[in-house]
Image (cartoon, rainbow, N blue to C red; front, side, top):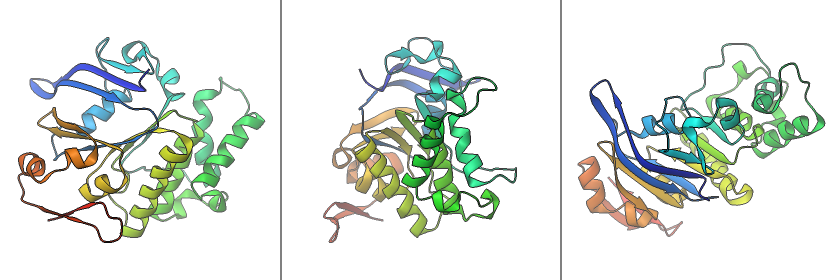
Amino acid sequence: MKPIQINDLNWAYQENEILKSIQLEIQAGQFTGIVGPNGSGKTTLVKLLTKLLSVEHKTVFINGADLAQTSISALAKKVALVPQSSQIEFDLSVHEVVEMGRTPHLKRFQRESEHDRNSVKNAMLETDTWQYRNRSVQHLSGGERQRVIIAKALAQEPEILVLDEPVTYLDMQHQLNIMQLVRELATKKNITVLMIMHDLNFALKYCDQLIMLKEGQVYRSGKPDHVMTVDNIKSVYEIDVSMIEHPKTKKTHILF
């Protein structure tokens, strides 16, 4: 059973067709990147997979269950979303923010169990945010705050982690830290990761699989070296690039 299976998914806003006949299978325990230019449908696809937008019956399946018939609360026990940027308006401690990740597993007025507390602590240890547990989230840097949001998502104990360009507004050091963290979540915890990505070299370096979108359709999908070719980039992004072997990682590297 595939964690995510998409069958002939279409979506339009008013008369503007955004996604057209999407057919995809996401493999378990792998890091899958979604790439494509602005307007290609990346964010719409993620919103449909996380029920921020409604899907038609029998078009999207999560662990074999029809997403259209799955409640938000039931989905939150399986899928966690990390948005591009997270605004936290209240002056909460880091620990309080991460505790919110347990909400889908608690009934109304139910108190946290030892398992809930351990899940929160483990999520913070895995993301190196336990050291900030008593600090106000408002006093963290952008990179620190993004790790806290990932910790909150991990506290949900998801089988699938969906991220919408989580490093866009971070400096290079924090971008690398977040990318390495997400890579390790797939490798060590067997979490199925699906991430919208802007940096094509990050996609080549960290992903097991890539989905390249063009004008609302899947242009290519598969292994990164198969998807990220000079010809494909030219066709989708309308730019000329060169490719070399990175001297340190030995992976393909794109020169713009």
